[in-house]
Amino acid sequence: MRTMKAAVFVEPGRIALREKPIPEVGATDALIRVTTTTICGTDVHILKGEYPVKPGLTIGHEPVGIIEKLGSAVKGYSEGERVIAGAITPCGQCGSCLQGNHSQCGGKAIGGWRFGNTIDGCQAEYVLVPNAMANLAKVPNELSDEEVLMCPDIMSTGFSGAESGNIRIGDTVAIFAQGPIGLCATAGARLRGASKIITVDSIDTRLEISKRMGADVGINFKNSNPIEKIMELTGGLGVDVAIEALGTQQTFESCLRVIRPGGVLSSLGVYSGKLSLPLDAFAAGLGDHHIVTTLCPGGKERMRRLMSVVGSRRLDLKPLVTHRFALDDIEKAYDLFANQRDGVLKVAITP
Image 1 (cartoon, rainbow, N blue to C red):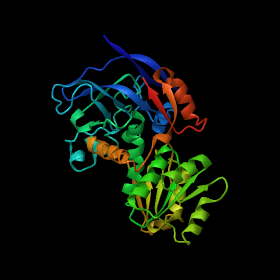
Image 2 (cartoon, rainbow, N blue to C red):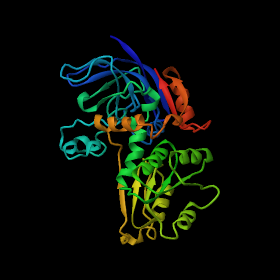
Image 3 (spheres, one colour):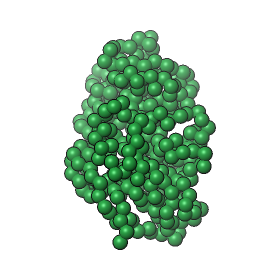
Image 4 (spheres, rainbow, N blue to C red):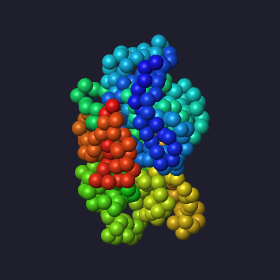
């Protein structure tokens, strides 16, 4: 039996490198030899035991790689081709998929998120991609692994915050938290036509990066009250859309407090505790507010479109990769990323 190295969830507080069998390929599957992957904030939630998965599961949901083997029913691809697959792997055939809700594939909440959640993920030498014809997207030759590494999740999620918020040309937008997802939300807001983008974080270097991504104003909440500052910048009206990109009560509530009546709170965060709506900020339910949540869109067409944006050179996400590790050093990578040391944004993991 052939085996591979894989980063598996052992118990809360521990993800470790283990030997596992290389997956068997079913008729509609594809086996991908992973060339580059990364660690997501959601993986840190799993590490901490805040999001439950089964012990022994391979973690990770952002694969870039090469087709090693194709199932007998998979057409339109060849072994040896470079591909990516989204963090969300819809089947393309169920009721949710046919209604356009690919992230909720199977009719269950977050049902489309399988890698590192309900099936083995991609922080490994190989990953099995289900429903390959709905999920494999070929990588253009001119794009490097690191240029497309953000497409499977971070870029798709960040952009979806702007899309779900229905940002219109001329809108004023506030984005709370400028980690990788927040930075991509900032870029998405600019591409959607926002005329004023305000970003909030506690790290000045991230605020500077956000300006390169399209922000007009960066607010360090350690130095000033972001709610007061945003209301001042909008003449007391509030923003049209506020995007929450961290997953905490504080950032969620802050977004609610800065949107205008009838405005949109677009939530991208993964929340691990109780979330409440303050009566005054919610206008007792009478403010015509819109609160929308989004799980990153997946599928091969979504991946193709995102790679098209990267290929157009309208957006450069390479600066988001700040650290690089071999798969053998995955535990060191988790330690760095989970504790947010050394200015880390994203790490590239190469098996």
